[in-house]
Amino acid sequence: MQEFREQILAASAAGSALRIQGGASKSWYGNVCEGEILDTRAHTGVIAYEPTELYITARAGTPLLEIENLLAQHGQMLAFEPPHFGATATVGGMVAAGLSGPRRATSGALRDFVLGVSLMNGKGEFLQFGGQVMKNVAGYDVSRLMAGAMGELGLLLDISLKVMPRPVVETSLAFAMSEVDALHALNTWAGQALPMSASAYHAGRLTIRLSGSESALRLARAKLGGQELGDMQAFWTSLREQEHQFFTPEEGLALLRLSLPSSAPELKIRSKNLIEWGGAQRWIWTHEPLSAVREMVQNMGGHVTQFRYADSSQPVFTPLNPALLKIHQELKKAFDPAGIFNRGRLFASA
Image (tube, rainbow, N blue to C red; front, side, top):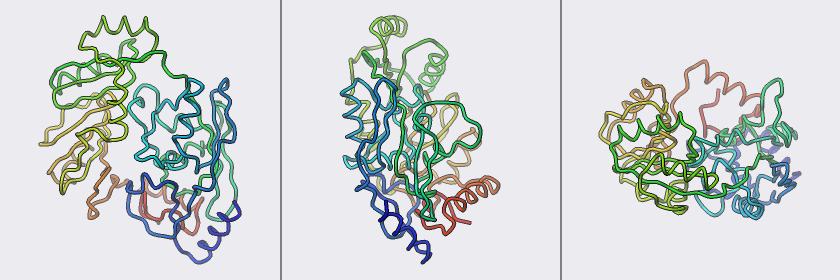
């Protein structure tokens, strides 16, 4: 902690940049930023874990695999299925990136499971927000603000997360259908009492995962039909970690992540695509100009991110409107007055 503080104060005094980094498994994500590395991996270990209270608190440098293995021993899990993108992934990097996996559409996003954080701001001050239980509070929920902040607001130190029991049983079903029919089916099923926990559509095949009790899955299988595939854990993990063949790099192209209303229609562009989250998350490879794709998606109520293999001449994230950008910049200034943390990784400084 003292070493972190000294490094932060020195950078603040010099006006130089710091690049917060744990296992570097997601170092490619976001805009390129320079600076001296502030390595979090020495700040590691589980501080508290209460299986009966459904929470765990760990230091930011703790390996994500260590957390998941510990939870599995007690029949529990991180319900948002965070992607690792490498064995070195840490809890701090997980929260900073703010990414969720296949179960997100039904269980909630990473930010919904953040109970509290402690961090060090750009003045070297120790700050603590939230707690270890879910409760309604008045005011600004700063702890959840850290989810997806990409380290721009401060150095995460300790993080408390809500955990959930693992499903008793899981199975997957497959259906041969068009993209239009798949989107219609997913939106229809979303309004029904079905134990769906993930969905994926690619190359004429819709695959869904059912999670819950044996009786619930039996009723769902009888109602939906389709081809039963069994557990299929490897398939869903390959989607989470982007090891599925769809994610094989396309030369000269960026992998685009589209966030859309789940009811948005089929995209009218030439592309290879894979659809998750009941239609709300769509991955595409396309030769269409990024500006044209962004305009189309914005008109449909969504936004586009250059997720991997970004074209450096184009912004990674959809540019914010001036009013919203000003809010982000003022928050950045409040936590990091000298602008030393992960400078420019998320958005332009004021």
